[in-house]
Amino acid sequence: LAQGLKIHYGCKVSSVAHGKHGVKLVTAAGMEFEGGLALLAIPPSALLPQGGPVFDPSLPVWKEE
Figure 1: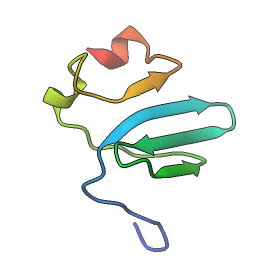
Figure 2: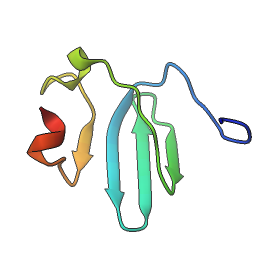
Figure 3: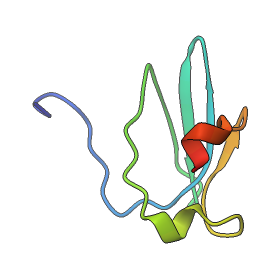
Figure 4: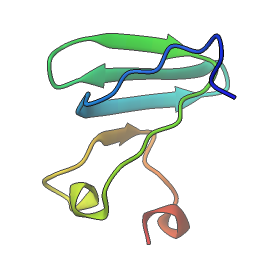
């Protein structure tokens, strides 16, 4: 399934900008990734207001629950 995809492990994502034209991720280390889509594995504790990535635009409430 992941054949031909770039997969990055252990990258703490600080911001996610998403819209009609794709997604842009910025990591805590300052690396930037852009693409048509992204799959993030985020532990629940990292989704606390002070711990997780900032989404722009914000996620709908039903996705934050």
